[in-house]
Length: 432
Figure 1 (cartoon, rainbow, N blue to C red):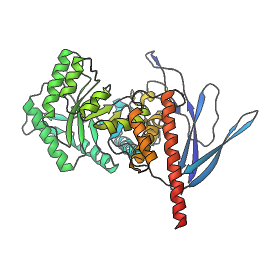
Figure 2: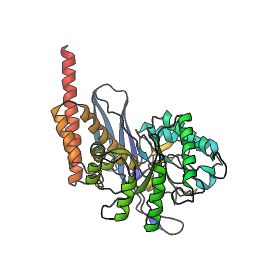
Figure 3: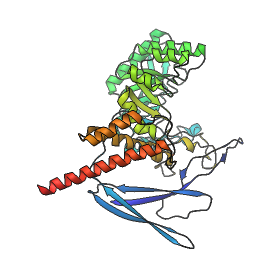
Figure 4: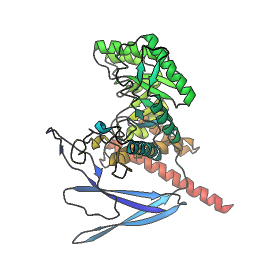
């Protein structure tokens, strides 16, 4: 059925933490009611969501009413449903973190709620089209015993099962790969690391894991750290296969010798900053991380996927908070969260996720659909996107600069083309 949901959005300029530090807080929902009171200097925007599940093609209408003491404003909403289905995201795309954290120092004290939130978390990611996420593996290994005994595999098996049930394409082990050791700089022998990897591979085959990428080092800096990082990454890469891969996360700068060395020796670099021309010419497998905005999940992502050997896309942040039980008042990092929990154990996605990530993925899927069409007009638009889509930070929707106008023009061109093709198919069907 066709329905309009309306939520008031609050944007408080600053919030003060207990330590006295103030910070800017991003937009968040205040309510999910069908009607609500808009308060002066608190609500600057109302978020409307139109749902059209299982509706046949056609035009549907609704009405939003805004009342004040002096007047009543009625805003008509018209929605046209076309006879097209967007393809699913075709490679791993998702957030860092996969769990919902409410208060980290009470972890394990309410296992029922934590498990409920975990299952809701994977269902929510699947429902919005995300296909990968990261997790903290926290493996515990007794290196003195042979064969190696690895604790923590049951938890990873559980996460893998949830990921498979929710149509994920991979998982990423990031941060705390070991519970009390550092994978990048820890004192491990190469022989022990090989035994550990072989044990993981056996578990992967036994339990039919999805592909797992393990981030060995995260932004190593300084000559000594970099030297150790390069050595550890090279060692672990020797044991990589199609289902278990190792990489380092860093920002590539072609002018810096340090990052050039790590890039050249990495089989699967996770890159924050990158050189588009080099990636295009090298056709080196890589994963794009961070820079969470509409373009880098939309038309820009499509361009990277088509022109480079991009393997996955992952960015901050599904859910991360400071663990403060008074998170409604302070310390919760809502401004980087894509999803938060409600008191009843259900989840609410953030304004940021819907305005940037999901709208971006819709752009990506539109371009993906366009690439399957034989229409000459479709080929021209696809070529234009592949050549000119922005891969830098996208402006906030509503800021009408050149990049935003270009992306809006592509959307209009694509939707206009799909509408005309849909009308043509309808006419042909009626004439038979």
